[in-house]
Image (tube, rainbow, N blue to C red; front, side, top):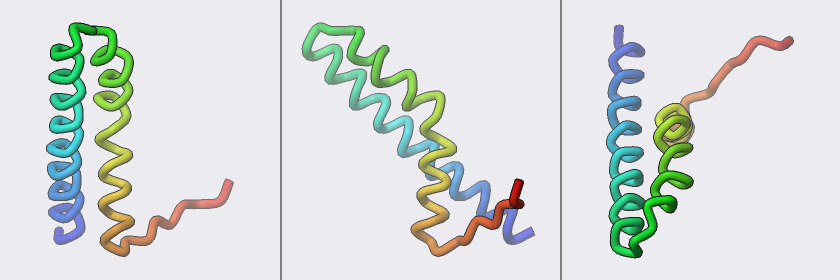
Length: 70
């Protein structure tokens, strides 16, 4: 139960960080009058950022990921 709560907390934090990064890039794109800046940089951040940031948060907290060998 504690592990599931920690997982949800880390992903909520990751979503907040990704949302903030996406908004900053979008605002910069609006200020420069270049919507493609937000599209080209923002889309990968939006799609792949949550899992990447959540993994980073877990690693910074000292969580070890144990993956099965293939």
